[in-house]
Length: 302
Image (tube, rainbow, N blue to C red; front, top):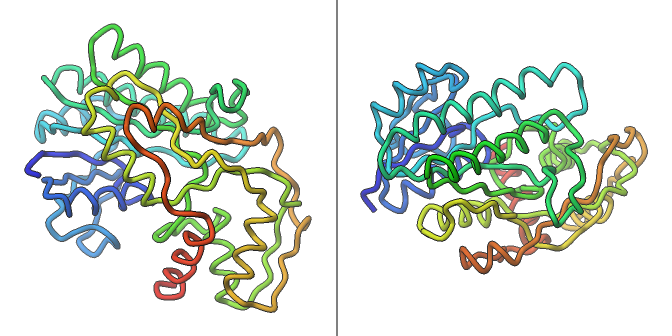
């Protein structure tokens, strides 16, 4: 209540959901996106103060932070594409690493500001047996986590990194992602073309993830921590797809094997203990209930 918060990537899936939650909690919310965020942006409150800023530019980032002087920065902006394409190396490097370092550099000059970063479950972690990053996106997130820890150790910046697993739920508009693709295909009466479905994933509902971000900003012990955010339960893509089809009641069938499996995929489950111990957080929405809510949202908003 009454705290000034800055949310980067506020036009995105998690960022928009988080901005709306913070507004409902009585915070003064400043939503930042690379492109102008319009008043009619879905999910954002009319009270939210919009800013357009490219965090890849150091001076722009500094001006923004000095103008707002937030109590908390939630950094969710970046290039969110886990494809294994060479063309993604530079865009992800500039958006996800340079943008984060610019933000941390200027935040370090503001007294008392808390910074919460969104990492990736594809970073090397105990829960995935320290598997190396499989994509340009994951590599930049791993490097950004390293810089966050450096800023905390060397300059005392109270920064926390949260690494969500496979986030899904209402409001995810990127049809390249599995759940939106499936939901929209079902609503159009189309049979989706999929991989073999063998990949194992830890599916976590978006509102549970938002809870974790809020708790990280409120918990002093979270400073300097890197925490997984997930359920700790692995479910294959095939099982997830079949569950969503059962929920929908459709007679359509998924076309497994129509698309090649992505290289270097490994199961990405969360180590749930640290987030439970430090934040008092655990996921509460099960996969079936979360998929029901999500499908209902797409039926209403498609």
